[in-house]
Each structure stands twice: as C-alpha cells, then as structure tokens.
Length: 365
Image (cartoon, rainbow, N blue to C red; front, side):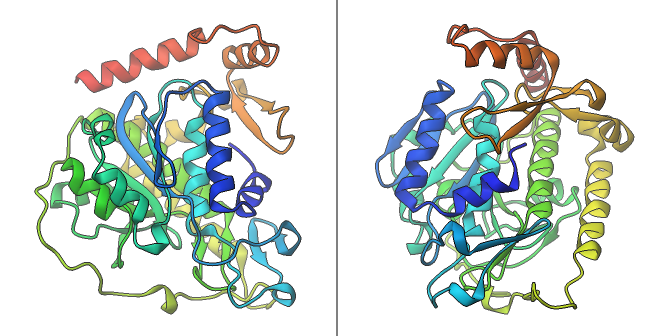
C-alpha cells in the first residue's frame, strides 16, 4: 500500500493537477479509460463493483510546507493557514483509496473520479446523464469513500434493507448525511450505494486533519467488501424515488481533536481501529474463510491474491521513492521486468491469471 507521504503529496494538488496525475497513472499502467474533461474520469474494471471519489476540495489547497505529520496524523500548521485553507482529506482520502486499485492490472473494480462534488455534484451529474454509465451498469453496488471519521456509513436513500444488512455486517455505524456523488450515480444505473468513512475529520475547516490509520482501515475494509460481494453474488437493485436528502449531523458538528493538546490520545483511537478491523474481519468471514485466516495472510497489492505474509516482499516505485507495495514473488519479477521495459502490454503474471480465474469463478456462483 502506498505511504502517508504519497497521500500528503496528493493533498497539495489542485483539482486539475490531480486529474492529470490520475490520468498519468492510468496511462502508465496501460488502462482503458473514458472521460468528459472537467466532469469525470472512469476506469472500467473486471470486478462488477464501482468505487467513487471526487477530486475537488471545499477550499484552498495547502502547500506542502504547512502540512504537518505526527505519527499517523496529518494536520495543518495553524500559524500559516488562511480562513479558506483546508487540508483536503475530503475527499483526497477517497482518491488515495481508489489509486490503490488503479495500480492493479487485474482484479480491479470500476473506478470513477468526479469533478466539483463540493459545488453540487456537478461531475457526477454529468456522468449520470452520459452514455458512459453503460460501463458500470453491471455493478453489484457502488461505494464512495467520502464520509468523515472512522467506520461510519451513510446511504442517502439509495439503498434497500438487504444492502444495508450487507454493509453493516462489517460493523459500520449507519449515520445521516447531506449529499454526495452516489446520490447521482446510483439512480442512473439502478444500483444501491453507500458512503464509507475514509479517515478525515473536521472537514470544510482549516482545522481538518487525517488519521492515516483510519484511511488504511477503509482500504482494507473495501477489499473485504469486494471479496464478500463476489462470494454472495447479489446485484443490489433499487427503484429511484423522489426523496429529500439531508437531516442528521452536519460537518460543523464534528469533533475536533487538538493535535497540540495533551488531551489527544492517538493510541486509544488506533486501538479502536484495530478492534473494529478484527470485528469486520470476523463479520466478513464468509469472504475470507475466517478472521484467523485473514490475520495470517495478506493481499498482494498488485495482483490482489492472498499470500502468506512471510512470502510478500516490498517493491519500491522508482518514480516515487516514497511509494511502496507489498507484492508476491511472481509479481515482483513482473514489476522488475516492467520497469526495464521488458513486458508486453497484454502479459500477465501467473498470480494475476490465477486471481482472474478466481474472480470469474466467484462471479459465476
């Protein structure tokens, strides 16, 4: 998985710069994609699930100099921020999660990056009215990672009870929210959706901060949801109804942990993350056989297959020295060859071929 420094880099990019960065990664890894410039970027995958994140932030993007790091916490130097400066975890944490899947050649969900969510879901609205919805019409469900905090979920009336049972089997707390991109995307394809916490807090303010442990947890949770979704093989359909979004807590009510205060207890929060991760693994045991199995094995970040943790090795991306992946030996050989330009575009590693067969087998059940 990519590092906290990689997320820090993403936080410093303007919306158009981040879009260019995403497209550079798409082209680097030779993925097919569709875009409406200034509205959305869609990368179809071979897993019938769609993940969504927006590229914009609700304020001014910070410079790298004023982003501070303390352990797993990213926050802004309050001595050098303006009223309009935001850290941008909303929704750069979601973008970070989607970029983990973009690195994979196979076993990847559909990835939708949208523009101008904070201005009223402009990019998502454009996508919903476009012909490109056909590429994700076969989705089982949609997930966005645009919710604050840790282990929370919002449905916005784009769900049914069976889908909510599936999502909450991962020990997520259902909350209220105002509006997000899935409110536009889900009705356009007639599929259920949910907005999952991705580790940012006090969003839309210059006191925003990110707990990277919670972001990592959201990524691990997304992998569990994919595996269980494929095993269950249920396409969660819903009939769009006329609803009024809103209600419940607003972002202005969010708690703020003073990073410089002795009252901030990071260890307590991370213990909570670890406990909930274990609970999520247990509740999602049908996808991974058992939580004990999950603890002993880890997913290769490149081909997506489970391997014994001792058999994974670290691969450092030469283009971004702070970016590393835990990969199996087969993928390591492939990546080294790819870096030397010795790999043909359609070449697959043995592990990737096995993983693709596994996905097809699970999808056919």
